[in-house]
Length: 332
Image 1 (cartoon, rainbow, N blue to C red):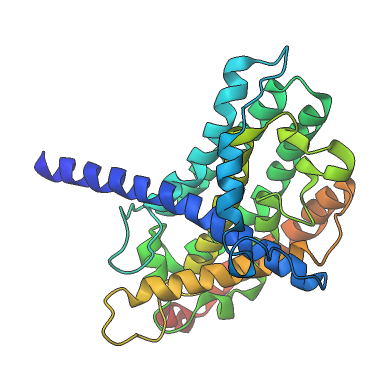
Image 2 (image 1 turned 30 degrees about the vertical axis):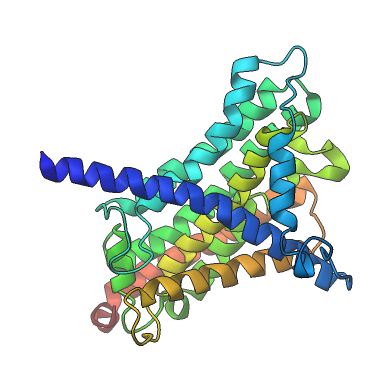
C-alpha cells in the first residue's frame, strides 16, 4: 500500500511539474518562433519589452489572462468552456512515461508507447468538441478537417512506430532508449524517421499542414470563437503537442538521453534529451515559415498515396531484415 501511495504521489507531482513546464515551454517557443520568423523574413521581431523583447511573451500572457472569455450566443456553453481544458490534458499525461534521462521518469510501463499513442489520439476529439460547440460554420469546417487530417496521418505514424517496436521487441520507452546504446535508430530507420516527422507536423496542425485553422480560409478555424484564457490554452496545447511529438522522435530515433557525459552533473541525459527535442522543434518552426500551406486535397493525397505506401514498404523490409539477418538482431 505504501509503495502504491508513493507511486501515485510521484505521478501526480510529475504531472503538476509537466503542466508548469507546458506553460514555460509555450513562453520559450513563442518567443523563439517570433524571433526565427523575423529572422527568416529579414526583420527584427520583438524588440521593445526587455532586451531584444525577451519579456514580450510574459506581457502577452498577462494580457491574455486578463481578457474576458466571451461566450457567444447559441453556443453549447458546457462543451464550449470545457474544450480548452480537454485540449491541454492529452498532451500532459503522456509525459508520465517519457524518459528524460535514465533516472528522470515518472513511470515506465511495459506498454508505454501504446499509452502515449492512445492518450494523444484524444486531441482530435477536443478539436471536434470546440468546433461543434462554437456554433460557427468556420469552426465546424476546421473541426471536420482536423478529423480527416488526423485519421490520415495517424496511420503512417503508427506504422513508423511499429518498425521500432519490431526491432526492439518492446513497447517500453526505457527499453527503446537502452536499445540505442551503440547506434541510434535514425541511422537504421531513416525512412521511418522522415515519415514520422512529416506526419508529426500534420498531427500538430503546423504549417504547411495547418488546414484546421487556416486563417486565409476559415478565419481561425476551430478556435475562431475563443478569446482570453480559452484561446491561450489552445496555443499552449499546440506547443506542448509539438514538444510531445519531438520527445517521441527523440526516444524512438535519436537515442533518447544518450550523449557525451558532462562532468559533475548527474542529469546529463536530461540535458541531451532536451537539446535534441528543441532542435527538432526549431526545425518545425523553420518549416512553418518557409513552406506555403497546401490544399486540403493535396494534404490527404500526400498521406494516402505517398506516406502510407512508403511506410508499409519500410515495415515489410524491416520485418524481412529482422527475420533473415540474425546479425542485425545481435547489433540491436
